[in-house]
Image 1 (tube, rainbow, N blue to C red):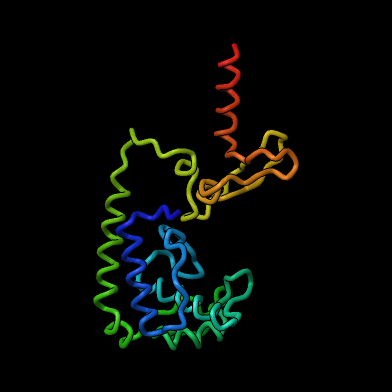
Image 2: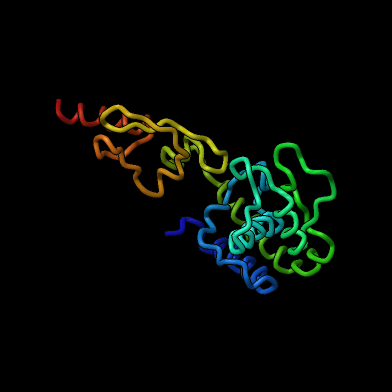
Length: 205
């Protein structure tokens, strides 16, 4: 189930559909929440229509069976650049040593073509940021928010009852339990697990 606010999810779907209108082979956007607040130095630091167009390049590459990146998805190669140019994205400089042609920008034609859609998405993003910035110190958002989210790429320690531990992004763990193959118990963020044991001890006293 999507955890993206409905209005923003709808605007992302609308923007993606507009790209599909010009590029029918682009697959549907299955998980808009994967883009919300996500920071990626390889694909652009914040969400915008230009970033969405960048992600569409990867979508078309996947549909064509083209390997457009290497080095764990960080280095964007010339096959990526070729598809990016089809979608109205340019890369004026030489490739970056570590990220290749990742930092593409919309050319003048693409800006004209998508201006209404880009402006509409930008308004929705601003409203989303304003809404999420209204938290107060009295707001409780749970361990995932306290430890950081996938937006910052922060991984925290999660433990199971048998003592095994893994490093995970809290928002990924929040989507569904990750089960330990040894004891068949779910991994929990260390702080949460400790708090749970403390409450159990207190209840038995």
